[in-house]
Amino acid sequence: MFLSQTIHHSSHIVEVLTESLTLKETPIPTKIARLMLVSDILHNSSAPVRNASAYRTKFEATLPDIMESFNDLYRSIMGRITAEALKERVLKVLQVWADWFLFSDAYVNGL
Image 1 (cartoon, one colour):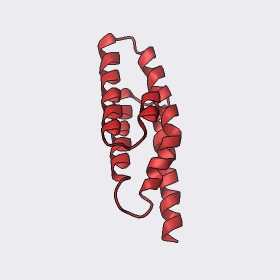
Image 2 (cartoon, one colour):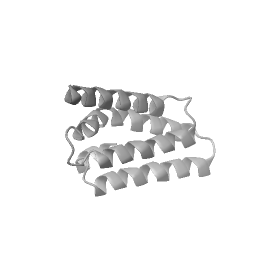
Image 3 (cartoon, helix red, strand yellow):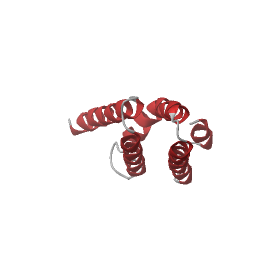
Image 4 (tube, one colour):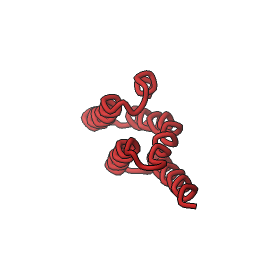
């Protein structure tokens, strides 16, 4: 029972965060904060805890949509400084994921 609940909860958490990160209405600071939360979850998904890796697997499927949304947001920002700050933060997160070996280099580069 606990196993199925853990997987169910991970699916729900990934779904809620993905939705928030892809909604155009979500403010930029909120998107950045939630991306940091995703990063924390991904870091903890490597823990030697039963089913912790379910988060990584589920996020791996939704991260392309999340990053596409960030790309659309970046292109829509009128202020160059704001756009560059957003780009810098997202690229730092991707670099951290590469450093942690969470995903293959090809996957991270594709994001």
